[in-house]
Amino acid sequence: MLRLLVASAAVFAGFLAVEVSAQLHSVAKSAGKLYFGTATDNPELTDTAYTAILHNASEFGQITAANSMKWDATEPSRGDFTFQNADVIAQLAKTDGQLLRGHNCVWHEQLPSWVSSGNFNAATLSSILTTHCSTLVGRYKGQTCVYSWDVVNEPFNDDGSFGTDVFLTTLNTSYIPTALNAASSADPNAKLYINDFNIESAGAKSTAMQTLIRSLKASKTPIHGVGLQFHMIVGEVPTQSVLIQNLQAFTALGIEVAITELDVRMTLPATSALLAQQQKDYTTIVGACAAVSGCVGITVWDFTDKFSWVPGAFAGQGEACPWDANLVKKPAYQGIIAGFKG
Ligand code: G3I
Image (cartoon, rainbow, N blue to C red):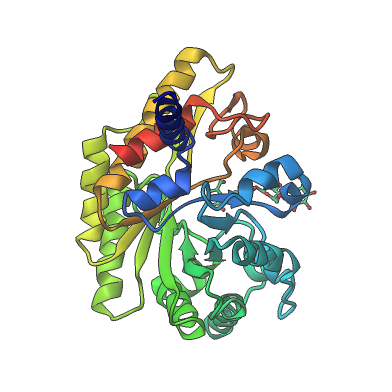
């Protein structure tokens, strides 16, 4: 009898252990999503405490290169393609059995000056763009880890007009289908995305993105998804129903959506009240994706405050990630789990 009691207690403890150690990608899969993932960057990969978590495919079933697949990193001068760092990230995904989101083919930032200040005519710039997209995407074609590409990154201003950069000025909006067609020819199996921020709830920019998707679809241009970045501020996250409605406005167009760069920053110093609100904010956002079947996955824009882009970009703000700078899980981590579990 005693033996039976001990055995039952052990089984119960086993269940508890499983429950307590629920991990992000596993919980996302249980909620019917393809992945939960994170951005990562080459300089971070020498930090073994960091990589121990990054390699854990139960936490992260997908990774995105935060910098090493961008134009300045992959074609620093014309025709000079360098994939050393990008290959490291792709290999990491392959070895760990994680999906890869390619990021990105065309963006006005981290664009080398030979492109932005080259004074190329339309035909030449179009050919430069096609070569860049097809060489970059083609490099990883057929590798089982490749799930999607952010082909076009941040094409809009906040008022919904197209951002003025060398591509718009020289090619007008034709640069968008040019890039998508080049990516599609280079890897017909990758899901092709347009990725932007401040399109998380209804407004001029979200509407403009929907108009663009409609016109690309009408012209039979390959487009499969919209990435909503979700760089948010603690306490300023829209309600879950507002987020769901907006996600559904995109999926109604016959495309999928993904949360591609999630973080929720706060004004420092962090307090327990701010961390508790951040936990709720993560739950709200993750729950919105969980509620929309066409929302395929969520990526945090790195998982630890140790390597977050936020303090470098917003003075006095930070603590935006689910792990703190000492690689200890914050309440936000449980907020993500709760969002998937509903
Ligand atoms: O490569 C140089 C290096 O040579 C130099 O020594 C060092 C000194 O500061 O700078 C390095 O460049 C930095 C680069 O990251 C690579 O580490 C830039 O200064 C820095 O501004 C750049 O920041 C990146 C930012 O994009 C650029 O806009 C962030 O790491 C990256 O997380 C961020 O990611 C973007 C997404 O791609 C698109 N959506 C918004 C998101 C956050 O800004």
